[in-house]
Length: 235
Image 1 (tube, rainbow, N blue to C red):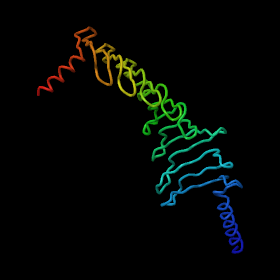
Image 2: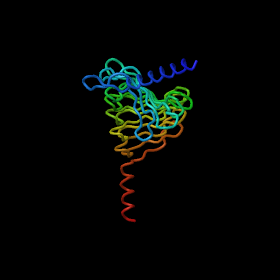
Image 3: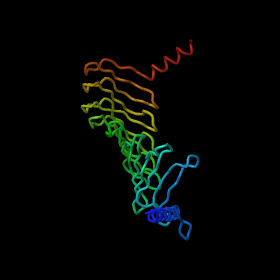
Image 4: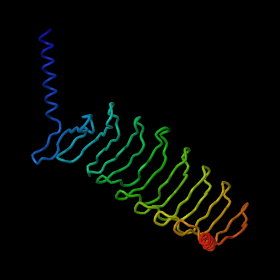
């Protein structure tokens, strides 16, 4: 019995040594090959693990938080072309976002989730790591709450805000992340409250104001700003 136990222990030791020798290896060209496991420098806890094929990531890579339980922080599932589907998790293991990466830059549609409810919060279209297209934000019931056009990572173009019932509360225009152009604001019943123009995030020109769906008054916002500036100079 003792000899059998000794033999098993020896076998386990040999297996452990063999496994250790098969980790973090490189090929003849010095490229990573086979299973690799990385650790945090100070804590020596697991940082990542995944398999390389002559320097190229393949299959699923896992990334861990630097804590006692080595909580899973993210996964990357690699395709043959080198792109990957990346998923991020919170400290409780709940999915918070997912999408495609090409050369470590976000590409295509990314989805973001409420970790508590696991419901979709927003979607963002990416091109070369920057938002390009219409970003959408959702209510808990799945209805669209906001739509904003982006170009090269900044708000550029039409913006809309909705109620949960689909009524448009705001229609405005953005240029370089600032309100610039026509804008219309409505109440929860869909009635126009005000409309006019913005320039560089500031109301300008003639604005129309409505009460119960009917035009109540007009104000020249440009002159209003000039008059205010004159008052400030006098004071």
